[in-house]
Image: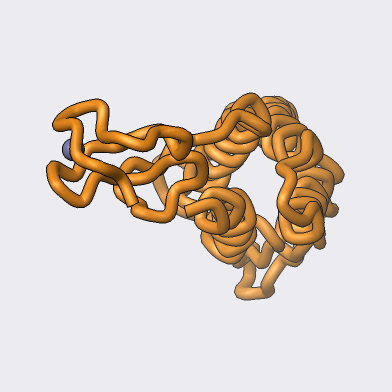
Length: 192
Ligand SMILES: [Zn+2]
């Protein structure tokens, strides 16, 4: 149970990383799709090939997006901190998730502005599954990490375990008794 709880945020960060392989944004012109970019293409920069006049292909360079790169760094930092933090949850995973979430919102805001300015109203940008999933996963990682951080150090009773620390269970009626009890609080039977 304890190890499952600790493994939640690395899994969420890992899934967020997978999302960077999926389409993040699509550029379209008058309802017609021009090109889609994955998260990694936004991180590293890419080329936009467009058929120009007279059959030649115009290549337009798409520069790397620092905000996408920083969001990706948050995943790496979050993954690292949740793997190497040992038994204790740390604030790094919560901060990584929260920061990643904000960076993706900022990225969207920036791309909307870029496309509106450079596309002169001709080009629309729409956001794809990878972008939305990554945003949700960042938020999930942040809230889960914050939740575990909040409950850190508070013992969580495990009523289903017969070996739960500090308790023993009555052989007669099965009810849970404090380890100090000699007789069952429910039925009065002698406890082992
Ligand atoms: Zn009993």
